[in-house]
Length: 159
Image 1 (tube, rainbow, N blue to C red):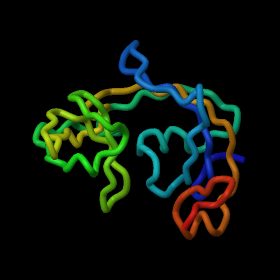
Image 2 (image 1 turned 90 degrees about the vertical axis):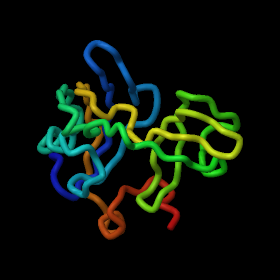
Image 3 (image 1 turned 45 degrees about the horizontal axis):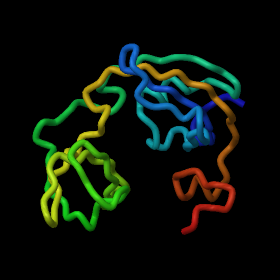
Image 4 (image 1 turned 60 degrees about the horizontal axis):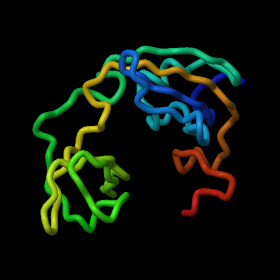
């Protein structure tokens, strides 16, 4: 089966900025998403379109097609109780915050007694990136996945 709208795709990735590896899924589970439902970086989703299981390829994405440009004014003060990922926070650490649009990764800039100033840019924003991709599997989405707009794991989605 080829990757097309409404397919569930699982793939491993390694992302580079130049020769520097930034992140990889190779030591864990593959990433799964519902193709054609805006759940993937636009440039990466376009590159995956038409591929099949067991295909390996690389794609170079400009910042605009990956995580977008950096916004210098994207700083917000967030109460420490809303930051997830550690008990003690220090500048440079990454945290997860739940927002109305879902989970968001932020970078701690400055920590106070009750709040932290956080950079809301994705850590890879403003960077041209290269993705090495290995498609693990492609299958048709279930009707429930399509109605929910996302992939469900082995035990369902919990809602």
